[in-house]
Length: 288
Ligand code: ADP
Ligand code: MG
Image 1: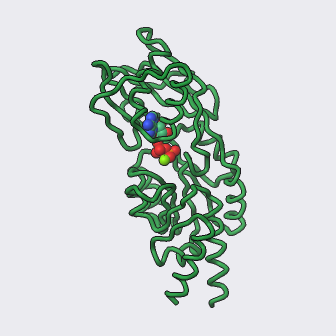
Image 2 (image 1 turned 180 degrees about the vertical axis):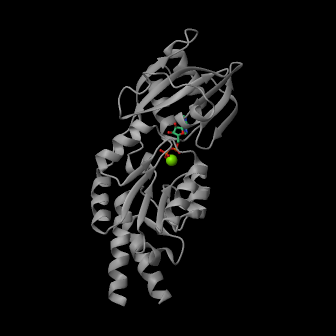
Image 3 (image 1 turned 60 degrees about the horizontal axis):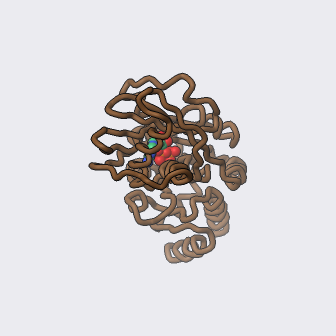
């Protein structure tokens, strides 16, 4: 049966923007009972525009907050970074070079700029460091907010908006029809996660999740008897992809996440997973 499976999975991948790295992944896909999606770039487009820049420290103007954040973000490939740099370049293309740049998994970015220690970070990171989130940070449920810390002091924040992919709703209908629960685990804030979840009618969502917590979520679902497929990107998702019964890496096939995954979702399109599952079920029904 193996050569047939290989032949079929090769055909499926060729048609559907999937790379199947693991011979059994195609067979396993029909057993999936829970799909755990990441949000940014998979259920959503991952195309961010800046909607608001706020300062909460009178020493720094909003322009200065954007300038310092941009110094770090020019070295990051995260969709949030791309959105921030786009905004900066609308008015001014002069961006200072940072020193000792670091991208920290699930947290954001850190570096020195002009002698100041700058961090641009997630809400989950603020929570673990006990920094209080400003009250009006989440004005719009659709906004993603990153926080700018200057010399250890929360000094401002940048809000961005992304859009849900039109293909996500269609894919989720197919999963539901096949009794597959659809969930989302994201590093983004609670409000935005809930808005996406409500709009798509997900079975559950997990917000402000740090990378090691994604592994725990997968394990817990497995303990409850679920056969879990998970999507993720980047180095930070690799342990959870390895823990999942079917690990699906999103986007480019060059990073660590792709190496630990069973399947690579080349176009980040959830509908390709729906097609894979339908095709897998149909194929094995015929064979038995
Ligand atoms: P998701 O789980 O939605 O795919 P990520 O794991 O990629 O999100 O990122 C989690 C969070 O970490 C983001 O929502 C953001 O708050 C923060 N983050 C990651 N990279 C950056 C960056 N380059 N600049 C600012 N914040 C970042
Ligand atoms: Mg991600």
